[in-house]
Amino acid sequence: MKRLKVAALNGSPRKSGNTSILIRHILDELEHEGIETELVQVGGRMIRGCTDCRSCFENQDRRCVFDDDIVNGCIGKMCDADGIILGSPVYFLDVTSEMKALIDRAGVVARANGGLFRRKVATAAAAVRRSGANHTVDTLLHFMLYSGMAVPGVQVIGIGRDIGDVWKDEEGIARAIEAGKNMAWLLKAIAAAEQAKEAS
Ligand SMILES: Cc1cc2nc3c(=O)[nH]c(=O)nc-3n(C[C@H](O)[C@H](O)[C@H](O)COP(=O)(O)O)c2cc1C
Image (cartoon, rainbow, N blue to C red; front, top):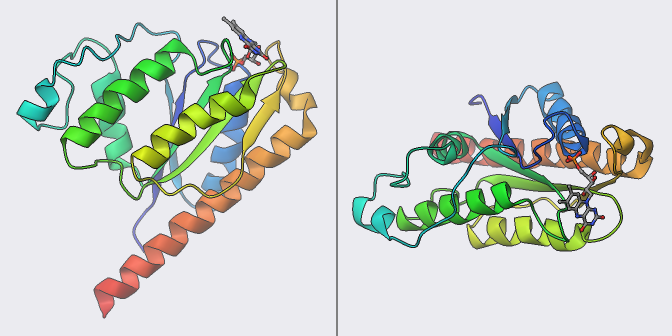
């Protein structure tokens, strides 16, 4: 079976914060199943939003015309991966501005190029102090489903405010572990089905 890969994108400016702890638990399960992983830091960087210039529809080169931030790098990593994890802390009941900018620009480039993220296996994770976690996860899921990704059904929400608080949320950590297991299961099931199809 081919070597499977998952790219995780952390929308928190706190590199080692609660979102990254949740993502790490998902990645540990994937690695345990022999799946290669990469964690990309998105939050805390300057990322411009989409300008609706439509250049990506004209150029069709799988890139955003603005090449001065990490978005094209992220698109490349997302395209190369079989699975994608998007994680964000809740900021005013939604994802961080960096994560939203990535969603908008990567989403349009993917659409302009015939659906670059179609059939990737995807999981969303959110860290929250009190309120807005469902809305934040929904933002991530809407992008995933709109882009044609396959989402195994575990909602990963971890509760905490200060860095490391999420460790105390046993249920949140358990959800992240379960999400990793489900993601690995689906990735392997799809790879096995594709292999059987090629062999027949
Ligand atoms: C600008 C900002 C807005 C926030 N908005 C909310 C919010 O709407 N609801 C909430 O429960 N927590 C909110 N928080 C708290 C974070 O979601 C919480 O601290 C989370 O654990 C941070 O995750 P991180 O360590 O991965 O950055 C906010 C924090 C910041 C800095």
